[in-house]
Length: 190
Image (cartoon, rainbow, N blue to C red):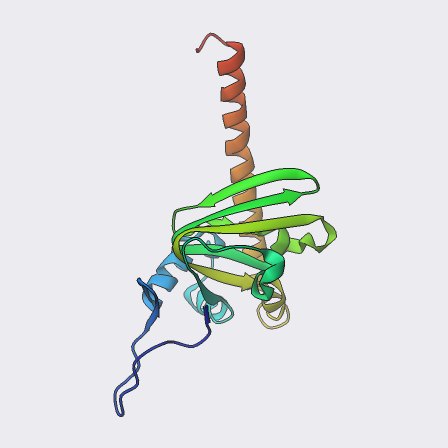
């Protein structure tokens, strides 16, 4: 279920609440902005730039035990996924290489390859929703609408994604080296 507008009880004369509701998840808009602000995506962006970026991001809810491929959901086609709450497992085949990722902490990213131009790559992804989850989706096509009006936002977002991916690659390299040392008893540490 995608909520593009706020869901709230309508009473004549009363202002709408800034809360998005799905099942047992109640996500205040403030929580969404907190997750966005704490994510690596908006590092070095000013407040008004974050507001502009937040204006093109959508909030999507998934129910526990849902399982689907990205091709089944048009909203995921070229979208970067940022976890707000819940637990999502992403399994993918990227050019015949398996990749698995678990989103558990608010601000975790998924679908970076598809977002930055995965159309040229052979990617088949599947999402398994482990707990009721809320995610932010930033579609590449929407970010590209800011190229003329706010190029610094686009530049910063892409730079931050490169930094994020580099950090993940560095951590995985360290983990691989530690496992190699463990299995082959190298360097006398094990």
